Image 1 (tube, chains in turn orange, purple):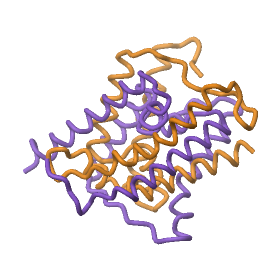
Image 2 (spheres, one colour):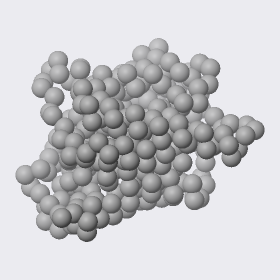
Image 3 (cartoon, rainbow over the protein chains, first blue to last red):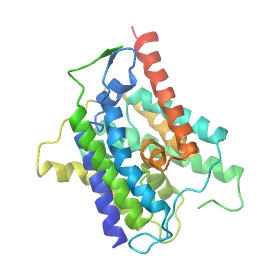
Image 4 (cartoon, chains in turn blue, yellow):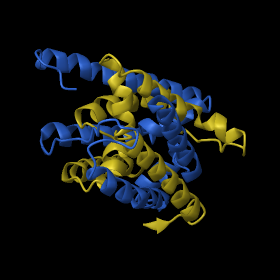
Length: 144
Length: 144
């Protein structure tokens, strides 16, 4: 059951990205280009998603188990440090270069876009590089 | 700043956003997890037993979304302007940055803001600012 609901959640998420126009990097860059001809659409995507998310997480916060009886795995870290800010800045630079963030890149890959495949492979390489660097720095217990 | 009224799609983007919020809601309420794409994908690179199937199912749903969408309507063609070299650089930065920053537009942007997490507010502000600055630099300062 959790596998099926994962599949459905991924599917609905991806369809949402297509409907919203966010699977199209040109549209994302249109939002990030404040000084040009600005396309505010991305703000409407966020507003719609957060409106539903606020309700869902208000319920989730009060529960210790999900409705399928699985443990609630909500982030516990509250630390605002260099890793968080530095990592997010690097991500934002990459996002601004190509107009792709992880979700839309995977959806565009499913559209058979060769350029999305190149981006996804490079993104996986970046994630693998993170794993390598992490293992070198903190050898003992890996965080879950 | 001028608003690009031809590109702006408030209702489609709001509707897509609601679907994205619904997907995040389903995922946290049924599976007890955050629908953060970079985390779901990145977790594949440091595999833990019993932790693979739901990740693969979620990603399959995301990549399969255009295929499902095509059953109902024609999938809008994305426009990917970045050349191959930029896609590689952007991909590596997005992969590395989202893992150091522990989240992307979905995990911090949609879910984190919905949880009212200060950490996610900071991360979202950082990657949005970096995205705006990068597009400003590439389109208005460096572009010929």
